[in-house]
Image 1 (cartoon, rainbow, N blue to C red):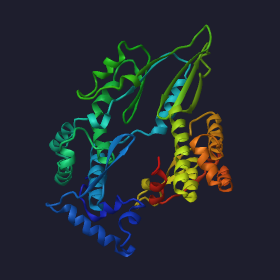
Image 2 (cartoon, rainbow, N blue to C red):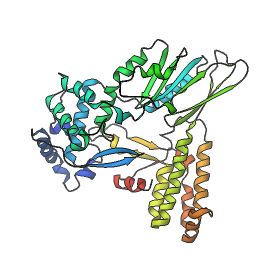
Image 3 (cartoon, one colour):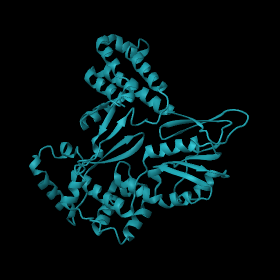
Length: 408
């Protein structure tokens, strides 16, 4: 029987490694448990209400941020209950990319469909999922009550869709598309299907006429595809010569070369970082240097360059109860471990070093005026190529990461 209670023991199990630093700084370590007991009582009180929430914009999307620890724990446990009850598990990005590469290499003809759901979280009919949760005889009363009260908050009740930034929304979104996923997978000609949040890829053995409307027929009524991001790609062996097909998916660019291929051979598949991601990295280098010119904070500039060229430990992924688990990483290697060419990393290194000693434009003029060539020269040791090949790992505090990202 699944324990859905918001007990101190269950809340402790959901603590992240950085939680004590962020929320229990003024409490002695030996008093952590008593503080969790106190928070558990507050959450279990029938008069429990959520406190203050902050809002931010990330990639031009509104994101909600709980400010109070009791609210964070309550939402974590409610989300944990739903995930366990419904068996919700978000797709693994690396697993999807591995499968896509394997499929593309197969020397058989097929059609590939790339779809993107428009304004995904904002377009979801939250009332439909809330109704499903409310009607469930398995979800506990307290879980239902907490979720109901969360969505009754004044800044959420008047807005459509699900709020970005909390795990509960991600789980509810997966529940919402459960039927869509099943229907696409059951389509006769489909032999591989994957969805990572709102990015979809489908392999079929036959062409699907008017594919956008065909797959739209499986979507819930209020969802639609982003037409500009939908593509049909015909991957067939070409007896006349090599034909290259290129597409972007999950931060990668896949280039498939098809020609006269033997059944025992594999197709030539080139996997690189997408141009959009490369431009983002270059932009962050420039913004970091601009901020340095304005603040004269070289230590922060060094942290930013180090952050961009290395791999950062995501302690958030490691819970206090998971002493034996391995931490997750994000960075130049772990974000792009499937690339098959180092050329882009070398180009990024050249761009970084060129910008450090730029003499052109307003940025170059500012750097010349500062006259810190010696300090800037020390940043040449940080390399995208080295960070990838050596899987160089660095660690920053939660505050340092916020400071690093502030100017981006």
